[in-house]
Amino acid sequence: MNKLWYLSQINLMEELPLEDLKEIDRMAPMSKTPKGTIISSPEEPQPALYLLKKGKVRLYKLNREGKEFTLGILGDGNIFGEVETFSTGTRDTYVQAMEETLLCVLNKKDLEEFMKERPSLAIKLIGILTERLREAEEMLENLAYGSVQKRLLYLLSKLVHNFGNRKGVYWELDLRLSHQDLAAMIGATRETVSATLSELTRQGVIAKGRNKRDLRIHLEKMQSVMNRE
DNA sequence: TCATTAATGTGTT
DNA sequence: AACACATTAATGA
Image: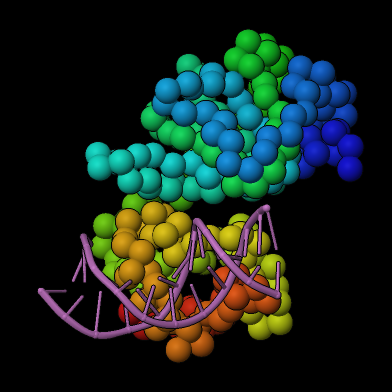
């Protein structure tokens, strides 16, 4: 796959004509980021817009006790970053590559100039940010009122939506998440998540994948469990 | 493959 | 929910 193909897969860019993609490609060369790299942090904020061509990044914050709380995971075709005029998250956010990741970096100046010439891009950006905000509010509501099981099921449904591949009756997550990782996304403890997952396995809602620690989810069963709550 | 480290399951408080 | 501890899985030399 070439660089332009990747660019065309970015949410924000998908309807842009080829000439525009070429221009962005000139401004923002592709770079390869190894697994585990902190791309941006409160200590060293990067005022730029990142185009995630391939790979996955995790956005998280540290709470008062220094524990991580995961705000979200972004996959192929997503954008993230922060400049004065907009932000895809809040401040004090860490962005870490969960696997080897191909990124483009658009600096603030280039981005803003390009936006001025192409108002449709700004409108698209607003749409993406609005959608993120809506999802964040939905997640907040769940975190505030749901049981751990409910929160976990909600999270899994979101993950399947973004990272799920159909495997027969199940959907397998194209993500390697430990119980600790899941716990950090729903504000629960690792032990509770383990116990809840065991219970859901007994009920046939989830199952192990080919690798024992890959998760598979039975969407229909999950829906019926969620509805009877 | 085997030793070491990481993740998970579970009982107790 | 936190902790301790046993078991099991993943990693990498």
